[in-house]
Structures are given as structure tokens and as C-alpha cells.
Image (tube, rainbow, N blue to C red; front, side):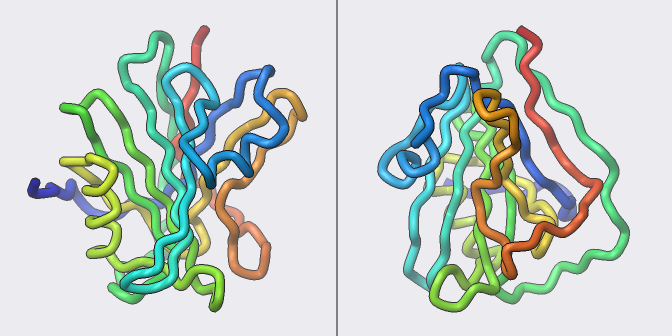
Length: 178
């Protein structure tokens, strides 16, 4: 399958709300198998070792889920498109455009996750079944966040270098109207 990439890179953090009945250990469980965190949304995480060490986080969003919608903000102007391995995020469409696939890769963390190139992201998206994709801004803006309604706080799924989140006004939020 040929993966088509759409347009330029955009900065992005993904956020959506967990249902109030979410189990306390869902974050650990997603390393073992896909975890359904809400109707139409599953999360999965895995370690990838070739061509380099990467921690990969995948959110799959069924676009036919009743009440689903998206919200966004504008991107910052100071980003670049170097091909070096680094934290990256990309969005792809799978299942004939019915499923949004979100892939985030941690980077710049020796012995944990070195990052991904654009070619790596293409490979990861293909593995998840995506046929069309767009690369989002990499680096410190890569954030995959779930709002845990049970605890009332947002939870970062991926891990930033220095364990510090950079302020970023660019986001794509998945919202549920029901």
C-alpha cells in the first residue's frame, strides 16, 4: 500500500476525555493490548527497536462514532522540518477514511526513545493501516493527552525529554457531544 502524505507539517497535541468509568490502570494496560477508553477510541503503546529505539503511542478514533467532533488552534511560526530522528506526531486515515490514526513517538531520550524520522513515521502509520497521512510538528510539541474524568486531570501518555511540557497553543482535540 502506498501511503500518501498530505500537505506540510502542523504542530499538534491530541487530547480527549476518558469516560468516568475508566479503570485506574488503563495507562499500564495499553502497553499490553489496545485499551478502549471511550466508544470509538482505543489507545495502544509499544516499544519499537529497529531502525532505532522508539516508544510509540497510537490512538485510533472511529470517525463514524455518533457525536464525535474536533477542535483546533493555530500553529506557532517557529518550527522546522529536519529529517533527523526526534519526537514526532502524525495523523493518518485507515479503514477507507473511517478511522483516524494518531501516532506519537518520544525522542531525544537515550536508553528510552531516540525518536523517529519521516520515513519511520510513514512505516509506523502503514503498520497501523493508514493510507493517507499528515505529519504534525515534532519536537517538544508532541503530546498525546487524555483527560481522565475520574481523577479530573489530563494525563500525558508520552514522555517529554526533561519531563517538562513546553507551552504550545497548537492542538487538535477530540470532543464528544453526547
